[in-house]
Length: 103
Image 1 (cartoon, rainbow, N blue to C red):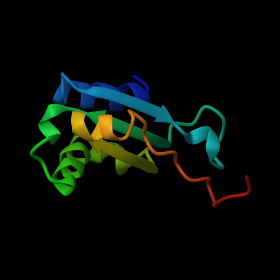
Image 2 (image 1 turned 120 degrees about the horizontal axis):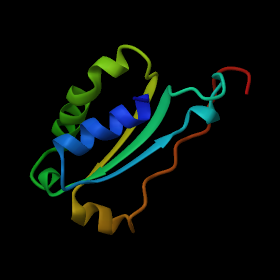
Image 3 (image 1 turned 30 degrees about the vertical axis):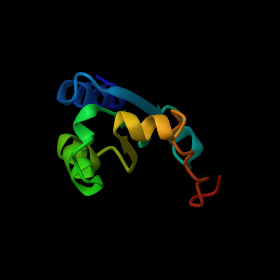
């Protein structure tokens, strides 16, 4: 299973009713073609209604910490309740340009 599929599966299994948007942003960085090292993850779920932002991040990091210790170099998390997602016009923030490497 690819890293992307593993990330998606773990989050979807933990939050079955969630909207899960996952983008492999590795191509924007100075890594070999086909890499799976940089991701942006958006999760929208009712469970986040009563959960502070830090707890949301802890919940997701707990699902993928082994990947962050290994193949995943960067994981941008955008975690919203459905109301917060509506207020954002159902848009995740764009990731900043890569400033490292020679690209």
